[in-house]
Length: 266
Image 1 (cartoon, rainbow, N blue to C red):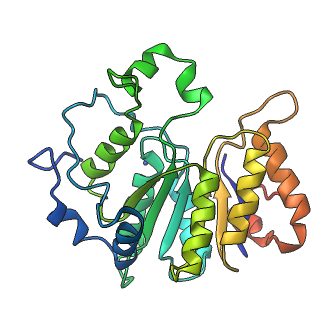
Image 2: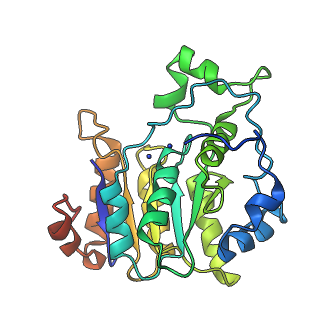
């Protein structure tokens, strides 16, 4: 159900002994790019350090992803080499990011530096996931009414031991993509892969695709999820992807679809 729209562009283990990860453990294990991003964006305060699990209600949703190993492998294989920055727009509780980081550690063992997985999300959920299910919503809210999705994301990532590669950035996808453009001007590398799984609202998807396209270098991979969220006219994701593919047809590489057996937006 994933759609690949560019290649000139186209989800776990036990906790550590203690329920808090110390600053010294995590930061030293991060790739250089991730350390630079922590310093630049968070003034050196790593959001995945000192993660407590005391106030989280189990069970954590570990299956909230449609991303598959074959999708990750294809993106790693088809992107410009080596992949140093993988950006995920829409991460929820971390299922897809965890699977991505785990697969990278398996597939890229020989690579000198493993990629950083930058997860851009408001960590507030969307209308289909959060607002229509009272029981589910109860697990997502603190006593004061604030959301705990980011805490659950952090717990999941640390529980699986991927706080070295994964870095959350609490922001909308549009702001996150604009941030990447600014970072490029400040000497940070462009992402070789962008995985889009955000709010899925019509018009917003198209804007995300356009901004992501501008951020990617030639040879980058842009792919996404939830092509199958449908309505009477095919679904907002489908309509925006098809519109994007029509507008940018001359820049698309359709040979990716032939290799993967996927439907390519033309």
